[in-house]
Amino acid sequence: METLTMNRKERDRLPIMVGVKQQKLTLVEAAVLMVVGDRQAKRIWRRYLAEGDGGLVHRLRGRPSARRKPPELRAQVLAFCTEERYADFGPTLLAEQSAKNKLVVDHETLRRWLLASGQRTLRHRKPVHRQWRERKPCFGAMVQLDGSHHDWFEGRGPKCVLMVMVDDATNRMRARFFDEETTRASDDVLEAWIRQHGLPASLYVDRDSIYRCEGTPSIAEQLAGKQPQTQFGRAMQQLGIELILANSPPAKGRVERMNGVLQDRLVKELRLAGISDITRANRFLDGKYLRAFQRRFTRVAASPLDAHRAVPRNWNEVLSWEEERVVQNDWTLAGAGQRYQLHKPAEPLSLVRRRVIVRTLRNGQVQLVDRGQPLAWHRLPARPVRQSPPAPPARPTQTSVGNKPPAANHPWRRYGITARLKFRRGGARAGGAALPPAAPPARAGNGNDKNPKSQNPKKGTFSRELIRGHF
Image 1 (cartoon, rainbow, N blue to C red):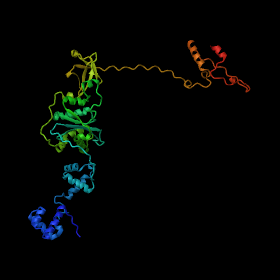
Image 2 (spheres, helix red, strand yellow):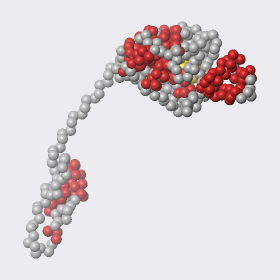
Image 3 (tube, one colour):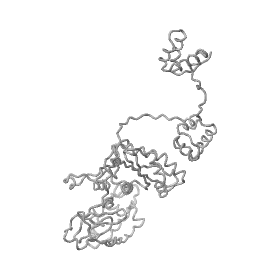
Image 4 (cartoon, rainbow, N blue to C red):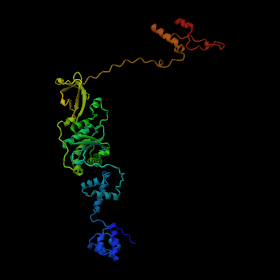
């Protein structure tokens, strides 16, 4: 008995053809039920009469497609994918790399080939509920910033972090490698974005200590109703950029997903290029990689409006490190381990005991500013290092005998504490005398002596002759 494999449409046609065969339906009515034309209904009827139920099965069922790739190409692509350097590549990236070697195949076709050959297995991930957020309507309305900590060089070079900026509306991206995620790194990557596009309306970041100050406000800040700010937060306020702090990593999912894509693609591109240091990696990013990456992943915003604003003249001074210092009575102040002398033209400002700003630019230049106005100053030499007083001479060490506790027959133990104290006070008045000589040894008993004191004199007692002779 033959087994037929039929799809739903073919199974629905079978009772209709049976009804036509039993003359319960006409071909015109059958064509209406099968949603086909009259000529197609006649062809289906003829195949059903000639082949039975098998005539309703599609003729290409079980046959290879005429559009399939040649077996030689499939063997070459699978051999290319088995190379060790492509062991952790996904189907999409593998298809791009094989196209560079003139082996063109679609990524979905390659995925099916890898599954059929056993080189790839399906991974089932547990779904996690997320709240969808609509993209911003225009370019520059909100830019997300984050540092991606990853083994970018796969052990070939030092550890580093990739600072990534992604526009929420268009996926336009800016990235650069740094040694650590610091305020200076955030300022530098933001500077590159500002030079290219302008000032964004808002900046979406996490709750790292670079962007959020966790200290308690001072009394002056409490009276003024201000919250303590970090250097980066202060710069964003002066530039007019709204700083938005995310409550969780998925909240800024745009840049988090971009980090995942870069951790997959960029790591492998750096491996193929043989790059293992930060300098060459940044040149690789600024070269062709970021341009090709953005052509692939950038999308069109809902609105053609660009929300970036013009850059102020002093934006480079804003992206700096500022500290408040008090001017002393000699018109000097200290900051960052240096001492500065204000010049005489600042005398009418009455700056003594007032706070001025010590601004350190990213290029190392120092500026002293009072209420937005620069001050004239010069650097003072470092204070002489205070010499520590000489160490006191070492006290003569006691002999090994002196470090030990007195022996059992030592005079110190034989005389009572009262006599020792009297002797110490008397000796101190007399200029310091030595301890009294030891008492004569007790007379040996013959066993018949009934006086217990003669055999075992009580410790700490003086004989009358000894007391009379010395006191």
